[in-house]
Length: 223
Image (cartoon, helix red, strand yellow):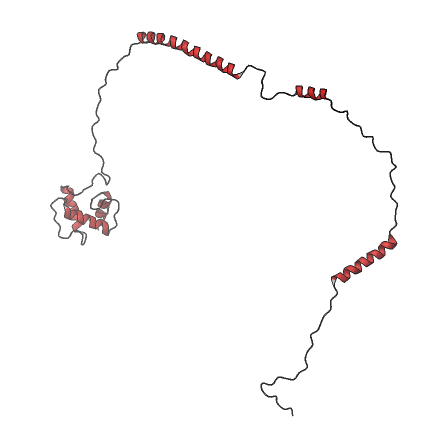
């Protein structure tokens, strides 16, 4: 029966040596390829002599005649000279143009005053008669909130109808008077009604078309 090994004691096993793998190098394969090529070249190719061209067949070079001083002088004379023109000088042309313009202006100055006096004598200015201006009657500007708009300061039966309808809306115009006068209390009641029921088409506290339409729909006879 084998004896159990003591704890903490290394196991006695044979040491494994590293295995070295040898691979053929690429240089060896390249050297083998060169060797095969040299062996094939020595026995499969044949040397062929290159024929040489005979001497003396080249074209004879023609030499151009030398340039003389006379030819050089003629070439310079034929070349156009820069900066010079065959026409008249510019100063003379400008002087003639200025003189012509002065003569034309002097002639026009002599002829125009005579024609102006004759034309003034023939035509007499006519004064147009003053036409009477007719003033259009001033029209009252339309109210932006509608034709039947009521606001603070108005009075009458329409204001009384507004007060009676607001009394029928809970907590808007409680115990309010029905005297037909659009005062501050009625303005606050209209503004409260517009705020609570989301009416945005009219000014705050102004009884316009949008506020009238919503109030009449809520206080109709069958409502």
